[in-house]
Image (cartoon, rainbow over all chains, first blue to last red; front, side):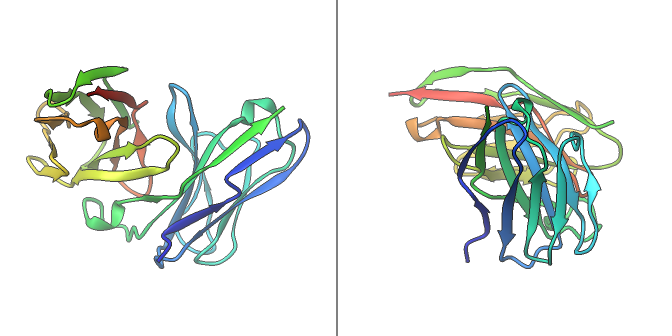
Length: 118
Length: 110
């Protein structure tokens, strides 16, 4: 049981290049999330998928697209990378069922992808 | 909207010292409250959580109590160890999404 896995661990891009960050979970969770972490900013939600087949914007969606490929996988794409997208990206999942204040609202995080855009 | 404010770091303590990291929140409804920990070079791990007012979450010697009257969820540990050195994030979740504080870096010296 690997939990949440992310690939790659590290990536360096040039401005304007594109790439896709991959995320997979083996906990049969319904919901998946992409965050970025920047110094002094905490984690900010980029996009999320409450269930298979749905995606919604989070706090900072500009410059990103996502695909919920199936229940296990949720990818994040940068179509034209910019230096402002240099960050550490985390994927997370939860089994949220719509009942706040239950065990299902706990999110489980992957190890992160460190992206540098030159 | 929802927001979390936690004390700014960095916090530096000697081993066996008492730790408090303050966290206050603003939220609609009745969110769950969390503390996550991030060790160097790793992702976030859930440290503890509380789902309703007056609940106390605890794990690995850390504790936090959900105080609705003061909208707070302060993290405490009676005797810290070098291995507790990490970044600690307070967060809330009224629904699908987590809202995080900015994180507090804790360094514990031997």
